[in-house]
Image 1: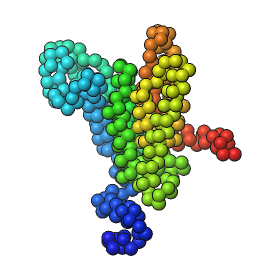
Image 2: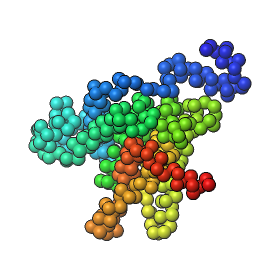
Image 3: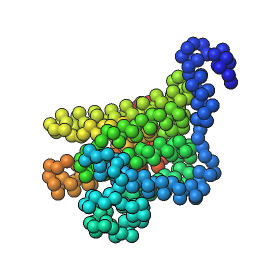
Amino acid sequence: MDASTLAAGASGPFELLLALASEAAEATGMAEATEIGPLGASWPVGVFVTVLGLCVGSFLNVVIHRLPAGKSIVWPGSHCPSCLALIAWYDNLPVISYFVLRGRCRRCGSQFSVRYMLVEAATGLIFLGCWLAYFRLGVRDGADHLSVYAVHMVLAAALVASGVIDYERKEIYTSVTNLALAVGLVGSFLWPDVQRVGAFDHRLPDWTGWARADALLLALVGAAVGAGVIYVTRVLGSLAFRKEAMGMGDVYLMGAVGGCLGWEAAILVFFMAPFLGLAYGLWHMLRKRGSEVPYGPFLGLAAGIVMLVQDPLVAYFRPGIEAIFFQ
């Protein structure tokens, strides 16, 4: 379709702009559906995404260590925190090098925290598990698209980094959560399947007549709902306990969850996270009375569960919700 045909079919400048943008996106290959077919479900792809997850986990260790210290996450390269010797590439292989070197620096012999290996292994397993769930097992309708998987893995990486930092330092950095939110918003605009997979009945609302704009608006609604429910809880909790009940970092974290997964997922995460954190919270308060309990790890864990089982959860709870609010 050429520009003259588009102009003839557009009733105004806004409609013409939308039509031209849509045509440009299609011309550059940004199709709404980015399904990669049987190739995406092949085991070589599974091996690739697992290795990719391990490498991402290695980078997350850099973020977890340097971001709270105010250091660059780009320079210098990986080095021993004790003797400052640069770590060679063959000593920096995710998970493998930790066991080969027995968790020690080759040069000075100082012990590395086991957390480095655990973060790498966990991230690799997350990438592999979601690939299995989306492309091999089909646990989520419409999730077997590269765009959906990519956005979800960016969110998962942000949740891992934020969860570990929050657990260790009781802080969540907006530079991490805002990056995930930005990826969710941009990804939703470029590939509406990102929002369609988490939308009501897997259908986008027809708000503007343009799927990309509708998906972006739905992502913004998800971000607002995710951040809003935590913010209201924070305000009410602070009034009830007469002290800050929840940090603003949790608000930004849930905004990213809602922007990437949708508003229904954000609601599910909101109600699931307290149950996941209940046992730890009780143990923590008994062990360290009055100390702060990090909530970010449990929001991240709940979001990971919702990524995998949102469809059966929505199918189970929706009849009751509709009976209460719509009948």
